[in-house]
Length: 114
Image (cartoon, helix red, strand yellow):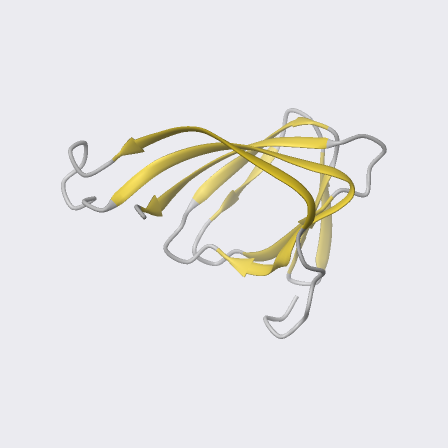
């Protein structure tokens, strides 16, 4: 998928913040960053878009329920419960739920504190 391609806007997505940890006191050089864990639910037909990157926001995703289709580099990959994927500085993607039930993921990433 090129950066110019347009994915649908976000719809049918709920995000619940589960936990954060200020990384400044934990790791030298990480002032202003936090480790964040969220539970993301994508309803049937839902989209987590538009196309977005993870530059300066690395993370990993783990699927708890349902199937999430990850669109990147022109390839659609389905992930079901018990698997996931990394989101590094080269990740440019968008997500959707084309499955039969709501999809639930746990997303953990490092972000700049607001």
